[in-house]
Amino acid sequence: MTASLKVALSAADAARFGSDPLKRFETSLIAVRERIAAACLRSERSPDDVRLLPVTKTVPPHILRYAFATGIQNFGENKLQEARKKNAALSDLPVRWSIIGHLQTNKVKHLVRFASEFHALDSIRLAHELNCRLESLDRDLDVFVQVNTSGETSKYGLHPSEVIPFAQRLHEFPRLKPQGLMTLAMFSTDTNRVRTCFGLLRDLRDRVVAFHSDLSRLSMGMSGDFEIAIEEGANVVRVGQAIFGPRPESDAHYWPGLFSNPESSRQRENA
Image (tube, rainbow, N blue to C red; front, side, top):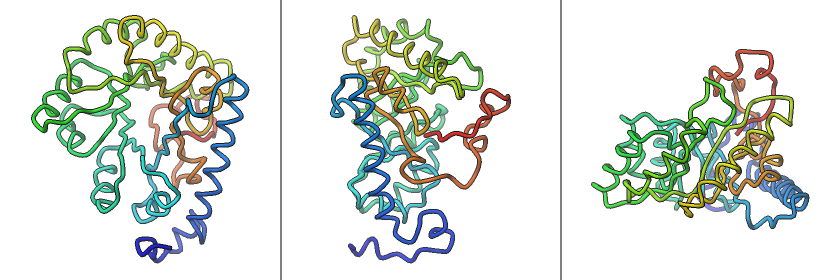
């Protein structure tokens, strides 16, 4: 164990992550990658086509050192403030940060200083602000365009009808490097409804790449549905709880507004 991993685990740490977080994360990663490989096999795809993005929200920085020791170097965070604190605490490690949650324009100045990737681009105003801030720092940023494929008002993202007009304007923002489309599927026990969300994003991607070849990848699927997402064409799956275990609070705490009705209140693992 390296010096950076010689940290004392509190009782709360041990209760949540076990007495040997390194071994636990290694075991979980193996299981997740096996599930990815199986989903790829079912859909006649190569596992090399699917990138695993570990989502580290609520995992303390000192525990993330164990994750880094397993080989994870790209951490996904929903909340910018949490990501900034972790970036500062882990500044000695070559971590690549992906922000995957909604971003207010007044927070852009913070994101562009350290993030390498942003998965929730959903407005021209936000694209303009990102581009201006990046230009001032002489930086580029990989971006995914977020689409609301479920039609739920509690979710962010472009309406499907807005995607092509939006993509046609991305050339106006040269500091943004489009990678693909992103979505959150409906939180439902009906896998057909979940699959429909992913299928819609794939169909939109197929239309968009006809004139914007860089928007070729699909960021979709979380701990509870990433296998379905892979079967529908996902290239990036955002997985948290399947690697790091349950979070301290209920899903409703992390996804406010999405669990207010019986259909979306089911207890399932999300990013």
